[in-house]
Amino acid sequence: MDAIDYKIIRAVMDNGRITWAELAGLLGLSSPAAADRVRKLEEQGLIKGYTALIDAESAGYGLGALIAVSLERPAHRQAFLELVQKLPEIQECHHTAGDDDYVLKVRCRGTRDLDRIISEELKSLPGIVRTRTTIILGTVKETPNVPLPPSEQAP
Amino acid sequence: MDAIDYKIIRAVMDNGRITWAELAGLLGLSSPAAADRVRKLEEQGLIKGYTALIDAESAGYGLGALIAVSLERPAHRQAFLELVQKLPEIQECHHTAGDDDYVLKVRCRGTRDLDRIISEELKSLPGIVRTRTTIILGTVKETPNVPLPPSEQAP
DNA sequence: ATTTTGTAATCAATGGCATCCACAGCACTC
DNA sequence: GAGTGCTGTGGATGCCATTGATTACAAAAT
Image (cartoon, rainbow over all chains, first blue to last red; front, side, top):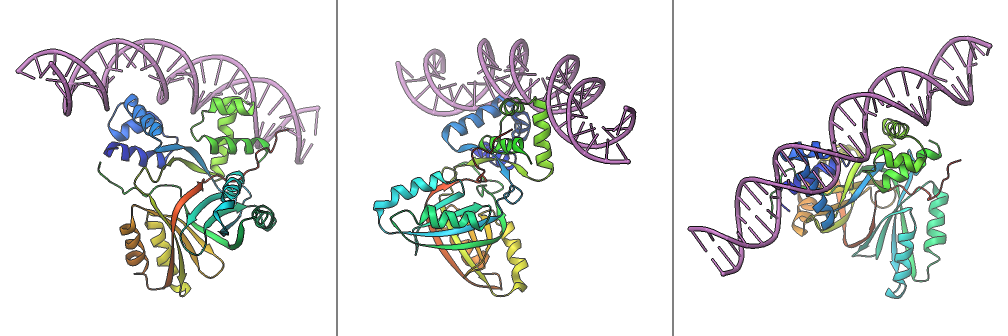
């Protein structure tokens, strides 16, 4: 994990479809060397995969919400976590310190979908004490990119 | 935006580096036709870009937090939004209905970074009435993928 | 000090892929 | 029925990814 690896990560976050030749140009290496580096980062799990970023609203998923969930006891946690993995509308699920146990970020087509998720899917689980839903009026910024500093050195 | 486009979106979300030849195979089209379809989706803004998914913890950004921000008046909103765009640690910023005005998701290296963001960056802005920070103990699920239904078939 | 070993790079060759162009099928319009 | 625009196919071309052989260098061992 040296300075070149940082450059690679910044480059592939910026353009996930960059060619090895272009990347090699940025790094000052040959393309096989660049491809080798990337392959190693993938094998280490530092690069988890590649994806296209889709505009949720254009795709018909204009309604976002944050749902804070309080679980009664650890007993029912397993079923909850399985449901979280199962539902594609749940984009994020964070275990949090504070008043609530989990915070979910969901994206759905409209209030009907949201109602189904809260009233049917979540509330049907035995251990859920309460949920607190916050509607997202608009998303100002949304990136999966890790905040690497513009230039960072190896550890 | 027909059934083939849905297949494309699902395919490129699943693998952002898929080749046109592979994609064409999934769609039952020729590769130039597949590439054309994708190009059009990019031009209409439905595909916003491509990125590598990086493991935040491996990259040294193991501390996540949700910060609820209350703004005093719309007068200072502009400066706040500019700061949000500027700080790379802020991965998401949602304008929300409810008690608070905005909810931020941040990723940083440790409490020192978090302190800096809250105490220096945010609190230095004039219009911010209060912030409420929730530490993320662990992330169960985190994907930027839009929740397209698994099968929205072709004719 | 020399050898050994492992890592990481370059170079050259090959096979596959993206890309471009010309042309064909089809629906819609006038 | 001819015109027009959209969408896809097929083939040619040039670039790129990938592989294997080889070299350079650093650290460890004898």
